[in-house]
Image (tube, rainbow, N blue to C red):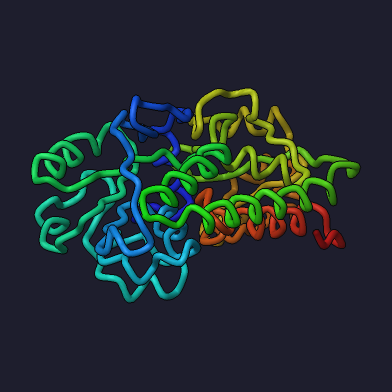
Length: 294
């Protein structure tokens, strides 16, 4: 059985550390320490994006027509599906990337992608490696992608729009009771969302409290016994996970399951911190607080 998209997103998150803006003598640097070259609205003209979040960013900035390669998981916006699929984003097929004749490659800044970054740089291809696993990293990524593609003005608009939408959700839920939530990512073994995950931030924005928010790991493994002990008010899960939980005899030991409080989350919407974060937070707020319309 393949991992659902939310589990894949969580495993990607597990590799992350928080990126910080850095300056070199001549400009900005990415999350591998490489200088970010300033582009124009015409150049780079052929961009390969090997990170679903940055693919969404490129289209939001108006640079989608310049994207000539993407990963299996780049399904948003719909127009991205017309871009050639070059395979995985983690440990990508460098030969397939080079065959697309890019003049910029955007990678997810995982240690697993460092060899690909070195090979591409050795071939003379500019590489932009970015973490995109937290809200502050998203802001930074948008601005650096804007710089590299010459879409600086659009980048500012995108950041401001997303932050404003998150602020509206936060304002709509801040005075409401905060249900204690267990967020199911995977079972056998059970994985959840910890404090190190963007999804923990999204849950807090939507007016919920993560029962495993005291754990530093982005996607920690936990036991069913510990879930019973922490006694969440609600359980969030993807469609398949929710069905398994509801049908499982052991999960009936969790009060929220027995009482029918397992909520199905739109994993395609909430799975990555990108331009739809505000929409994702609003969808969670409506789940946690029926009647709220941020």
